[in-house]
Length: 111
Length: 118
Image (cartoon, rainbow over all chains, first blue to last red; front, side, top):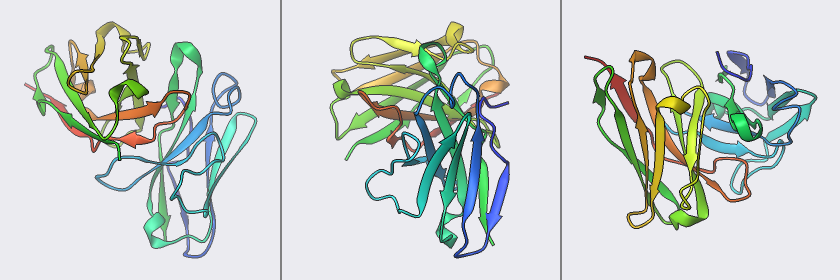
C-alpha cells in the first residue's frame, strides 16, 4: 500500500480535461509545498511534469497544471491528447526521517 | 544532458545480495543527490534511499537494515546493495538525480528489472 492515495484510473475524451487527486497526510502533502508529479509511458522511465505543486519544467506543456488543498494535491490535464495516455504518479517530501513518499499511480485513458 | 544508466544482474537468488550500479554522464556526480527508486509489477514507486558525493546517505526506514549506497566520484558511479532479498524485492530499479536544493527528481535512468528467484 502506497503512502499517498491516488485513484487507480481516470479517463477523458480528447479535448476535455481530467484531474487526478493525490491524498496524503499532514506529515507530507499537507505540511510541505513539495509535491511533484511524474508521467510514465509503458516501458519508459518516469518523467517530471510538475514540481513544487504547480511549477512546470522547461519543455512540459502548459496543458499540465498542479494545485493543492490541505492534504490533497491535484494534477489537471487540459485539452486531452492521445499522447497523454499514461500512468501518473505523485510524490511528496515527507520530512527528514521518511524523506519521500509516492502515490500508487493513476492510469489515464484517453477515450 | 544528464544521462543515467543502471547496470547489474537481472536475476538474484533469495537470501542473496542485490547489487546495482548507476553510471552518470553529462554531469558532475558531485552536484546532485543520487537516488534509487523501485517499482514492483503493477505497483507504485518506492523511494529506497539516496547518496551524495560527501558519503552521506539516507535510507527508507522500511529498508534501512538491508540497504547500502555509495558514490564513486572517480568513476562517476552510484551503487546500491540490498541484502537478504526475497521475492518481494523483485522490481524495476531506477536511479534518479535530484539537484541540490531541489525537491524533485528531474533525471531518471531507463530502469533495470531485477528478479529474485531460485
